[in-house]
Amino acid sequence: LDWRFNLCISTANAIGAGLAGSFGHIVLHSLSKVGGHDQNANNESASFMPFSSMSGNQFASMLAGMAFYYLSFVEFSGILIKHDDSTETQAIHGGSMKDAFQLAVPMTLNNLAGGVAGGTAGISANMSFILALLCSYVMMSLGYLIGRTFRSRWIEQQANVIAGAVFGILGNLQILACIE
Image 1 (cartoon, rainbow, N blue to C red):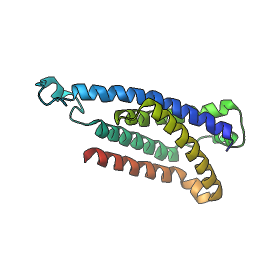
Image 2 (cartoon, rainbow, N blue to C red):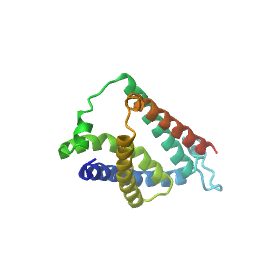
Image 3 (cartoon, rainbow, N blue to C red):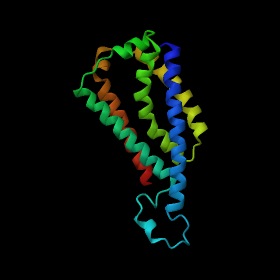
């Protein structure tokens, strides 16, 4: 995987996570004001607000769980819908920066829910940016190396099922964390 492509995609993910983290902070502060965390306040309208009794961490877990369920759905949907892998192939083998941006946009959109969830959990926008940049770069590099090392026809054919199952399990874990 060309490092420039990886850096372009990782930077887009980081920008998305930072912006979404800022929005998550707004949600966190809104929850703390509307959510009736002031036990002495007698605000009947707060009891009708959705998620008003949730903490920021519970809300973050719920958002992350929903994001993982969405990603699971997308992966399982990929079994039915065949797509052209030419953009991914070009990026791996040193295509243009346009190819990198075509990959970066959908990956960044998928990363937005994680940024919002992080913001509602109290992670700053700057920290969201830095963590997303580092984690995206390292994980894409490792994923490429592992995929190249263990490449097999069966894994290629079952990639959507494997990814969908992993995202579904992660969604379940996040929702369980929200409930506890």
